[in-house]
Amino acid sequence: MKDGMIVVVDDEKIVTSAFKTLLMVEGYTNAHFFNSPKEALSFLKDNQPALVISDFLMPEMNGLEFLLEVKELYPEVSKIILTGYADKENAINAINEVGIYKYLEKPWNNDDLLINIRNGIERSYLITELQKKVSELEAAKKELEKYSSSLEQLVEEKTADIILTNAKLSGIITHCADGIIIIDKDGTIEQVNPAVENLTGLSSTRLCGNDISEFVYHSKYPLKSFLNTEQSEIYVRDCYTTNPLSNFHTPVELSFAKFNQENQDSKYVCVLRDVSEQKKADRLRDDFIATLTHDLRTPLLAAIQTLKFFLDGSLGAITDKQKLLISTMLKSNEDLLGLVNALLEVFKYDAEKLVLQKSNFVFNELVTQIYNELKPLADKKELNFILNDSDEDLIINADKTELRRVICNLCGNAINYTQQSGEVKLTIKAEENDLIFSVTDNGLGIPQEDVPNLFQRFSQGTSIKRSTGTGLGLYLSRQIIEAHGGKIWLDTMLNKGSEFSFLLTDVIVKRNKKEVGTVV
Image (cartoon, rainbow, N blue to C red; front, top):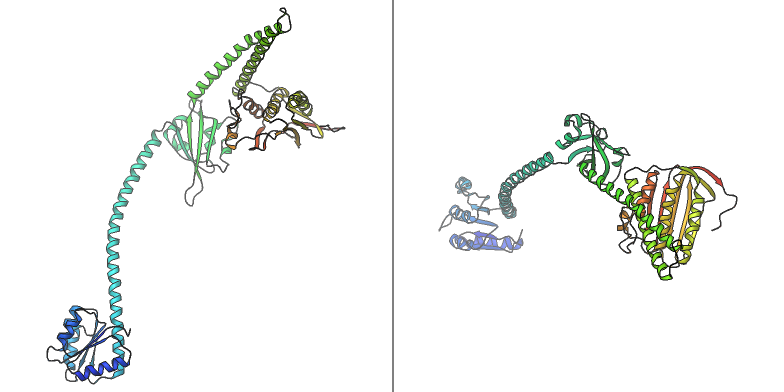
């Protein structure tokens, strides 16, 4: 505080000299002394002090007049007036008018004077800082008022946007052709749109508060079983709703999307799409394909048999050149017949018109028979073809013909897509009454992005290597295994190989210990 500017005014030089000596001794380095109030005012116009000390009686102007001028220049500056005893009463009466901080009687006490000087400078600084803070608060208040005004306008605009958006969303939901249901994590319906009321023939009052599985059904599984998953989006086919008034079934497909609300349990938005027309179109297409492929079988069989007559000499001798051409035609017709038969089988499974012919048979013997049939093909490619048989003969109850089709397809694919001198391994495992069969190869492997589509219809291998087959083998294999209540899957790693496996649950009816282990 000792660097604060002090201005001392007294018409007597002896007084200003005494002040100068005292302040210098006390370490005040920024003090200015004047014997003329007018000279002091001239100086003060360009220099802001921290403290002004003035005598009361001076010839040019008295101390009160001088300090009034100082107040006009610097209202916050502390002001001390020096008075004689006779002037004490006049000085006290003028304090409120001028705003004097202190008055000191002559002769003064140096200790009291120094205390008042220090306190006066500190007061000036505090008032200046306070004024600065007040100014800052005033500026902040104005900014806040400005922002508040803008915020109110922004809130009004956003509120209007939200109202408009909600109106649009409400209109979309209300007039949407698809049914929309909001359910909680337990499947309880909380809200529906009019399309759901039309599909079920029930009012929203009747639907809300009840379980969704009371109104929407899946053809095989409980509907709520699809919700017990960590997936945020779930798509379910083969569902239907029943209108209790007309007892009419409407086929639908469901899309579930999970959403979370703060401090609340997860909920689902379920969209029901009426697929009646799509089902009709699919049925017409499948019926057309089934009829076409069925009608193709008879001429193909006749052509194949005729070509065989040519080849075996039943219709007379033919030249080697003719035999080569006829053999090529026979192979093409047999491939075409295979495609026709595959299409018919796919149609039967899709239409659920194929009834499995289950019987008890030794599964190991079926695999060994297929292994022996395919070994020449593996030997031709110099593959290491291995059969890891179980140490038991597993008697299972299943459709032997259909399982043979699956095993032949998986083994044939492994042999076809494994490089020269590679390895293909067949493995039979039993876990309690469950059967697991695997085909492992060390081929190129399959990219992960291709795996989800591999068991779909007309899947042409992978993005690395396309198949020249029908694209129905793995799809038909999946249909057969799922018809048995089992599961088929693929584990693969790029450039390392693949392992196709299927699981049949609760199919083993008997397990006989082998007396002699199978030699691989």
